[in-house]
Image (cartoon, rainbow, N blue to C red; front, side, top):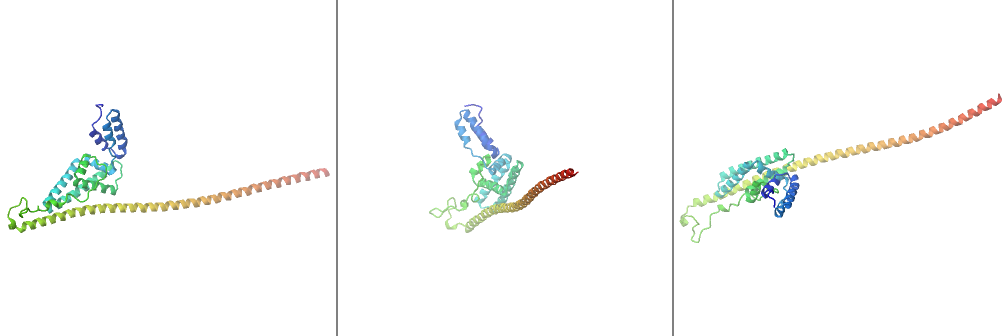
Length: 300
């Protein structure tokens, strides 16, 4: 095997940094290179790499251009998880706001990056970018792909973060004492239980608020996309009506031109016939003049 072959990871990073339009041809080039050098396993692995969608490519671009911003987003996600586990409602609200702001900023950067490269990024694509970033916060596998810049398709995640099971107190042992708790039996203060319940309720409420905010953002994006589609549909309908009217006008002019041409041909035919008739009459008159002149000459 040739020592000049690049490392597989280098090839993967290079391919997923390319635009989707460039991906297939470059992948084929690498496959041919590895086959020629005798590395069939490497060629097979490279050939199996999936072409990224435009959304995935933009997310990969973020990983390369804004690595620190992505790291901050993922750090916020980890803090959110810890705040959920503690039932810290105030901190959950702060972090949820920070998460939403960070995702909006990164999504805007991805959209701008696409436009800089001449790629139109619509509302649906922007929403998929935001969903992918949100999913990367909650799912470690998605997070690893996004961080490595090797996302292939838009990602989604149902819900936000882990379920709040860690907030539920441990089940008591047979002797009525909770694991790790003070062995006080029925003497444990009721205020602590109440505080735990209130904390869990507050944490659950904040989790639902975060989900509601995410759902509202998706709804707003979907509505904007629907409005844009409806506007485009109306514009297309108007252009279609204008085109139909133009066709009718052109057809009417064509019919008029055909009628005019037919009339001109008829007039031409009539003119030719008249010219022929006139020529015949002229010949007859000339013959009569010749004959009259001859008769006159004979008399004199």
